[in-house]
Length: 391
View 1 (cartoon, rainbow, N blue to C red):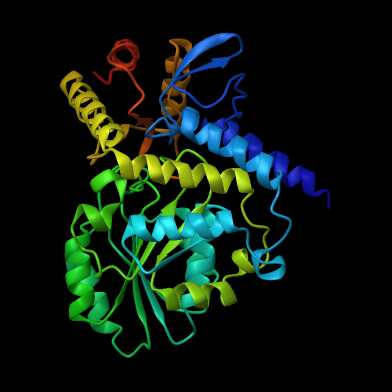
View 2: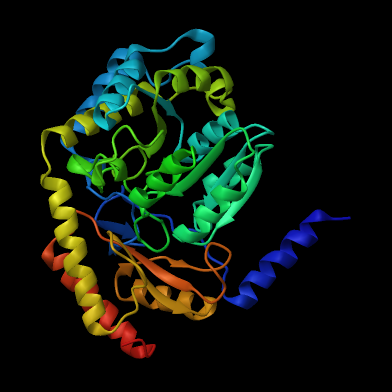
């Protein structure tokens, strides 16, 4: 059998359904306006929430780290030891999150894979929101634990599952802090209350809440004032922090256990020194001022209100993630392509990332977008929205 024939058949099917995409090759770094095929395009899909990718202090920190440490870390931290820059970053993250300890991984995806596969055994059960991120789903698949799914943010169903799983050794309730496709916030106080009533562990992935929710962007636990009541906090360094990586924040015993059991940590070379130094500088920038987070929310709330005034369906959005719900996959992709023709990059997201009838163009507003940028985007969206009968 020629396996390439099967791959080609899959690709042709995606093309027929309007779901096939080519990856755009940008001619400039991640920014508000970027170069594509010689044109300046307004970027409205980036997770660079606070615009830190070009912050002078972060760039200076990266350059200084290269001069001091070189470009690589050499090996896995458990084999050659760890560089002091990694230890400094973890101490700073723990202080920032208000936890005993933090452990850094190479990405947010591998953080969930490593943490979930380490803490869950065959006698345990994991209870997951149905709209949790793919990294959570894949992390759960790596475990031998029993699995239960509750309907999105349905606290009655969560309680029913907690009641029926009391014979398991450990029960871990897993939720995103901010859901990446809809931009809504998890009902974390209610989840914590139920978990405490039924002696369950609370595990929150703050990939899209890091740098966004809470004082100085500390995340959803801080946003709701739940310090000490959320057992495991997952954070990203790849979005609002402006670089790449992920981390677990929690008890010191949790960190020590993960160092010995989390396979992505045990079998992957650590972050480069430049990345670690960049992340350290970003956390320090956040701790010193709330200005960027405040600007982010002002931009997001104003932009969402204007989209709703024009008649767009923004779903359940209540954060800087603002989807425009379109439905049909092919129609969604055509809408995204027309926006690009108008100078706005807003990626269409369709099945299997979202349900077949829930295709959407996902917009992400950042602190770096100016009033003029957002006005340009709104004018383009209104024009294309009229063509597609959405406004």
